[in-house]
Image (cartoon, rainbow, N blue to C red; front, side, top):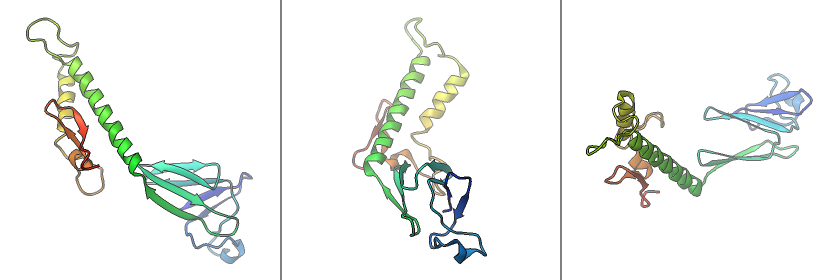
Length: 171
């Protein structure tokens, strides 16, 4: 991980190694050194993060990243997973999935006995979206590392009505 620090005066330094000492003269040949600073900027999993203080806490994907530094020592990075944050993220995803399902069902409702069809009941594009959405429950998710993963492995399952719920045994 490379960190950039800005001291507010227009000067900046990049530190690509944690063991780089704070003394610029010690590393004048490769131009890497630490300096006192006020801002921290870095990329984590393709997400750019900037904070105006060197001691910070952020949460990304249920991980907590802490940067701590004093005036002479190198920065230390620690990452921990928050079980409650993971659980809340799963609950939020389930809520959104069920909300989307209810709306798409309302829009595509076909009233067999009357004339109360949903406004998009016979719309081919909407029917395709609804079909693709139903496949989420049974097809693997792509983009989650090199291995395929299914909702059920994340503790997200569907009931007989197609509504999503959290399998409390898995997460």
